[in-house]
Image 1 (tube, rainbow, N blue to C red):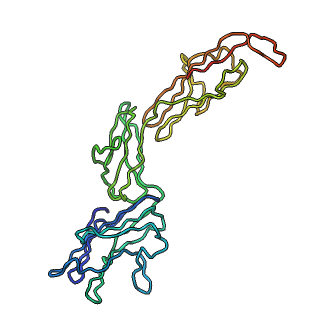
Image 2: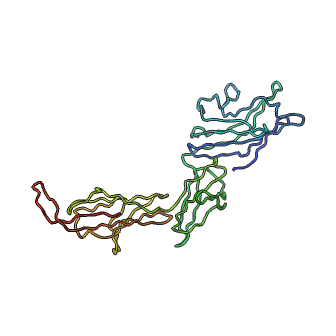
Image 3: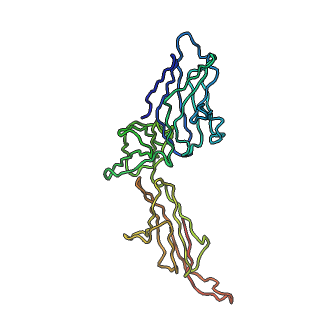
Length: 304
């Protein structure tokens, strides 16, 4: 579907579109390119005007730059050799889905040419996405998917931490890798997929952050950067069963028995990562009420 050349000839003039179909995610930028071939004895300087269009009014093409729906979003032109021309549409919308054609006029009266059929643009809500499947305990298989209709056996360019590594329909990576992987399809308006990666080392915030007396409640919140989004599980050291699941863990009615090493585990399809949190209690004499009575209580200290 992509990178297929279409040539239309009129009196020796030809418009060659580098792609017949382009798929793009909403909000992205689209590049459409063509080149012109002229008949013998003619020069490119004989072309006096050129533009791109999708609509017609009174059977005449409407220049995209004069179309209010594309206001401020369209740029087109030709390179210095005059035969290679381009169209750029920014912040594409689903309503931009249409067939785009290149039209030019020569300095000879009445000579007007249109490259037809043109290039069909399909704008969708989402573009490329990487899906993760566990191949075995050691390897993960990454596959690239698109909301656009692509060839059944399309090959994708794969990137690791922003650098190209190989081309293929899928990619095998080691489980637990912290590297970032993305895919790219040349027919998808030059857009890469969002990168997938395992959880970075989680951080834990504590509320309230000050020291707390026995009987108070403490809320621990675990956060990490991961794609796909991570799930969270809370453990206490030397215990097999988790204490809680979810990003937030609340200890109510704190007592000395809650002391110990706790950690939050963040996990997604790419891997997992842990963060430790140390809760320690100590005994002492602390102010207890408005009458300034001194009671012996436990004081909670949090050491992230």
